[in-house]
Length: 118
Image (tube, rainbow, N blue to C red; front, side, top):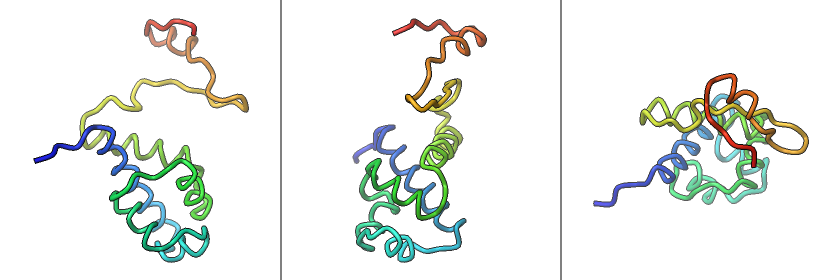
């Protein structure tokens, strides 16, 4: 028996969140496939978690359901943590800026975590 790694289980959780976002947008996999130009069968495999989603595919799907991709990932992190008791996404403090994620040294210090400036 093969036990999926945390990374594989997280990829499946992202797929589950994408399915939830598609449903919340009152559309279907076929509708998202039409809106994005992604082959429906391929998209179906991605949203079933049979294949890991690429960042570009996630972005295209997120655009079709009108939810920012980082929100989908954040919701997936919360779902993953709730299902597995994992600390993924817990306690991380990020501020997204036009130049990318900002250092969380100030927030880390505020929360008593030891960090180094890289």
